[in-house]
Image (cartoon, rainbow, N blue to C red):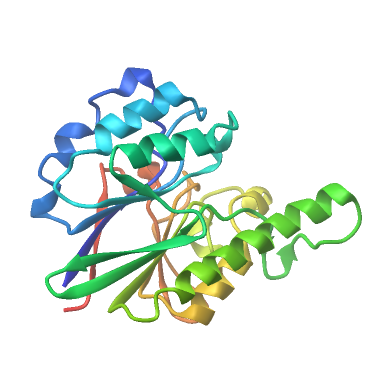
Length: 238
């Protein structure tokens, strides 16, 4: 069995230094890899990203992340990505990676994703330029996830890691009016099309943990306010 630890929406600031580290020191006893589902900082400041790097670097297991909307807020996402990468935390955006665990290979495809809504209640690329740009960005990010997942055709298990949700079920508890800003059905379609053993996301602080895509892929909302712990763990295989 491959044990996947995951958390998102930790929203670390400079006053949070050392907050998570004690719970992570023995990560290797419980998990084979740690996946971070975005919103690692509060406002996308480099000083906050340095705290993230200090908390999650140097662990005894690989750490793979995507960024979230908070990490983009100050338009320094490229610098944040480099900072985390320099500390050994692999950041994916339309990319994939492989983790070897006891002779088996776990593939992780990651993308931030975007909003747009879900079947029957979604935005369309029609009308004003601003609306078309919004929806086109959702489609572009879903296409990026597709390309990343297709790179993983030779692994034993595949995980789709996003910040925005691929399904509405894990948003239950959030006001329905904001669902279009919490996820997009295009992400779920790609996950079903390409096949995955597990899909992880964050972003929905008042959502629920468990859901399933229309194609039957397990989806877990690992936003820290939802899982209420330093991370949650999920098993792949037997």
